[in-house]
Length: 183
Image 1 (cartoon, rainbow, N blue to C red):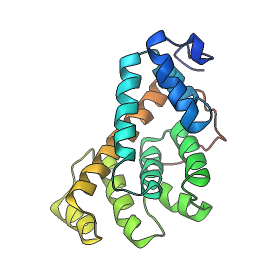
Image 2 (cartoon, rainbow, N blue to C red):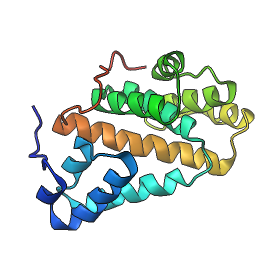
Image 3 (cartoon, rainbow, N blue to C red):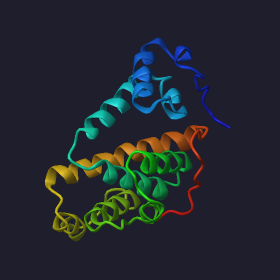
C-alpha cells in the first residue's frame, strides 16, 4: 500500500508541479505513479527532472543508462524501478531479455557496456568505496573521465528513485518485475 497520497491526475498535483508533469506525459505518453508521487514536492520534482534531463544529454548511450538503472535497482532491491526500467529498456533502449538478465546480475553481454555495468553495480553495492583497480578497469574499457562522472551520477539518480519508491511503497504501474537479490 502506498505511503503517500499520490495525485491521481496532473490536475490533482500541486500547481507548481503541473507543467513538469505535462512534460513527463509528453515525453513518456503517460505520467507514471513515481512522478505523480514526487510531485507532492514541486522542488524535488524539478530537481529530479533537471538531473534526469541533463544526464540524457550526456555521452552515455541510452542502452548503457538503462543497463545501469537495472543493475542499481537490483542492488537496491527496488521492484518499482526494476519494473519501470525493464519496460523502458525493452521499449526504448531495445534491450533483449538476455541483456536485461545480465544487467540485473551486474553485467552486460556487450563488452564495453559490461565494464560500466560492473562498475556501477560495485559502486552501488560498496556505497562508492571502490579501488583504483575498479576505476582503471572501466577506463581500460574506453570510458572517459566525463563518462565516469556520468556513470556515478546515474548511480546516484537511480539510487534516489530506488530509495524513494521503497520508502513510500509506490504502486507499480508497469508490468511487475520483482527484485530477486542484491548483487
